[in-house]
Amino acid sequence: MKRLTLAVLLFLFASVAGAQTTVVTGQILDPNNTIYANSFITANFWNPSAAVANWNGYPMTATTWTASTNSLGNFTLNLPDLNFISPATGTYYTFTIQYASGKPSFVYTSPSCPTSGCITGSTISITSALQAVSVPLCASGLYTASGCVSGGGGFPTSAQIGDITRWNVNGDSAWDATNIAQPKTFIYPEWGGNPTVTGVLAGTWASTGSHTSINPTATLGVGDQYSASASASTSTVIGETAGSNGSNSVEGMLAFYRFSNRIKIGNSTSVRYWMGLGCYNSSGTGGNTLGILGTTAYASDTPNKTTLGFRYSATTDAYWQAVAIVAGSSSGSQTTVSTGVAPDTVNPHLFEMAPNSTGTAINYLIDNVLVATITTNLPNPANGADTWGNVFWTGDNKNTATAISAIDYLMTISYK
Image (cartoon, rainbow, N blue to C red; front, side, top):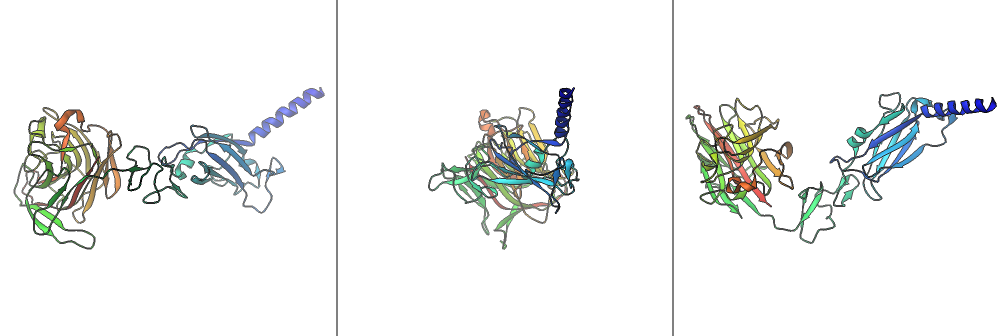
């Protein structure tokens, strides 16, 4: 009988102790979803009360617990359930995570009891809370107290003298060393004359519409204002383009680092604007055979013309749209994503595109903010000259008696 009673008491004690422990689990990822593998975790108990905290009726003899993550960033900690701490009000845990010695660390502070989310109950996951405050890991091995080195703080270990760094060009969510001169093409205004085109793949420059020079300011260089009168037209009536050799475009539409165009549109009603990379191939598919300027090609919301770019079409679009098109024999295949950025006729804005490292996604940015990513209907390099492009921007008045204008300050593209 005594042995049976002792066994029952031990079982009851184990059950109560188990109920007074919270199993804390989580997976630790950085903001880019890189795994904090084999990292160190330290949990500290904090009691803001002046009184000595008791757990299970006894003074807290341990206030620090440690664990490590596995190769997937997962961990488990058994911590005293704060509902069984006395006094419990205001108690909480801090979790300090360190990737490795000398590498970035960050701290997550749990809500204090009795606030929702404090460390109580049989199990609790803090995965989302940890990821919300984690700092970036760097494949390049460059770290500061707050995470990855950015902008001149050092070089990756593979760098050589004279290299420059570019973010994520190798698809590793890190600053990557590159040791090739960056070829570019620029279209920039010149006071009182036509814009100058310079660079390795400049090709032929062309424009449509009348243009006048715009004085520089303290924050903007010289601009070119292109205008067309209030006369209905089924074609584009203003715009610029560069990158043709006479019979086709010369720029690979995925083989670039960044396209940039700083422009101010003059109208937002009864007008349409396009800008980006557009294909011209005199013997090509669908609308690729049409010239980019002064034709019906971009006087449409759905041009049958291989394109990567931005579109704003009054009455159709409330916001600028990110667009990718592959031309077909009779119609093109088009992906259109809203950027959430409304047209602005007062201020110039910077419109940019940047492919990922493998050319399987195009990132669209406005004023240095990522506003869209497209992975479908991207130009297929196997289609030859039907996937080569010109840099361009155009405007039309949607066949209404509407005057239209825009000021372009600089258009440039850098090549891989």
